[in-house]
Image (cartoon, rainbow, N blue to C red; front, side, top):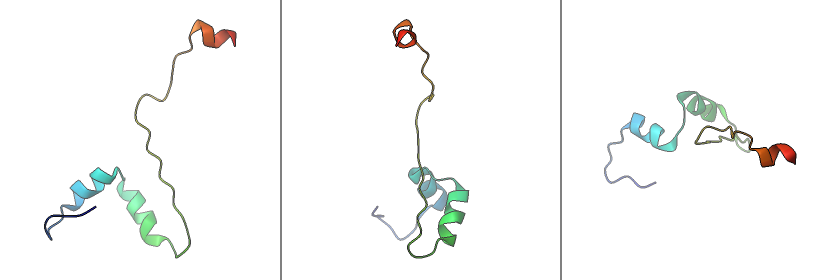
Length: 56
């Protein structure tokens, strides 16, 4: 991500990455070779069952 200026709005940047601040705290504690996976899911996450789905 390239920034047009040297001034960065940290709150806006974190929101654009869709990270919570606790994610940043975890990232700062990682050592070389460690991984921290972050998943982002948009939507309700639950789909109501239809009659067709109940029969299968």
